[in-house]
Image (cartoon, rainbow, N blue to C red):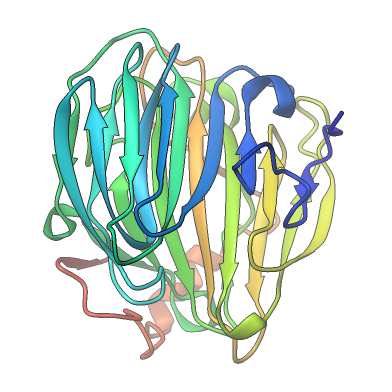
Length: 295
């Protein structure tokens, strides 16, 4: 039996053909799921979506996606550090088949959340993914808002990608979303899935917020690691110098409104104001983005 530890080093969250397989039962919460699947050239994987909605997101390579007989083609990308990717949304209560091209393998992330509504399957091209440059100075990072609450319709699932240049801090200032406070904070579970360029490493910090189970993590994270955040102040996520960091955030919660509302840690919230006196790291965006919206 796998333990419900918050930090899952690469290989410790595997199940069957999936090198990463996080379910609500395994995580000890109610909504969020994440799978990563590697398909060899021409390989396939078929699964039932059950009571969850899912996004099929290429991490490396492209794929064909069949949803109850409806066909979609994902162009994908060379790697998460090369470009934004297109993706496919698949609804609950459906059967999905993933197929790699005959001449190339593919690595896919399947981000999921238990939901109520059954929305239609949809394809979103890479050009439709809004890209945000967040923070400034050593806190500069790039956010690919492919399934943010205000950019893509889903029932409960929220998912974004964050790219942090080597040596920078992201998920900073520390923030939380572990209780509902009207117009101030959402209650959201969260999964972080990491990839690190050049066989590098980074660090992830989570500290207890006094609400929930008191999650406390200080972890060295490497390629393929996962961190589960049911509660707590999360951040910083620190990229080691010389090694850019990628993480996929998967979020969902019980709120009637699908929204990402956060509370900054009171000791560090002032840092956002200080960004007005700094410039965005010139290394960003890490690659040519279809749409860049500095903030």
